Length: 277
Image (cartoon, rainbow, N blue to C red; front, side, top):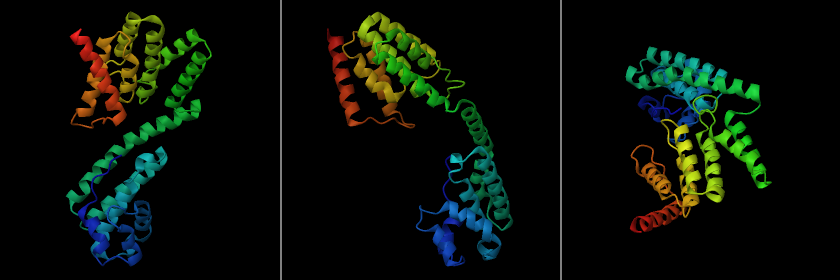
């Protein structure tokens, strides 16, 4: 979970001159605060510090308890969130302005939902011995092994199962892995069955994603390289255009490496030759 910027009163603690040196040192250098240790120190020594900075110190403790909270177990998330809430209340009692605490209050309101998702993951892991993504990866590995051993029919069944994984249910968050199932099917169709079979699989893959796009940007360039010279310029054009769109969008652009730029430039050259023909 992303935290808001460090509140001004917390940033000022290091140079306030009102904290014992060993506590002030936890806040330096700026941007490298020791938030876990700060949270522990606030829990242990809040009532010992100068009342003039007690509110800011409590606010720092709340920030520390929320820092990296998304990486904790669901139970630990709840514990740290409860402690953050208590410290935010103490901070307000000791004069911290509401606006300095407001963003952290918002974080505490989001934590229960994140903890619920974490609990679901923990229960899934306890039941299956692996995460959903790991199970999908294991099936893909088995399919790859079968394909390499010459069991094409068996491998294609597994590739399809990976591609058709329920990304809005059990396998949410594993879209990039599921896309590999479809990419393997496309690769096989290009190799053995020709353009029309490739188009049929492409249409199935696109339809399986509903509102989402296939392929995931991570696999777009390898897929473009696979499709070059395969007699499906219509598909290649879509893959290239959507990958460039992902790289150029204003919000969270998916940047291209130099190697990816080179591959896409070759794909664009092929498309231009096709359009001139």
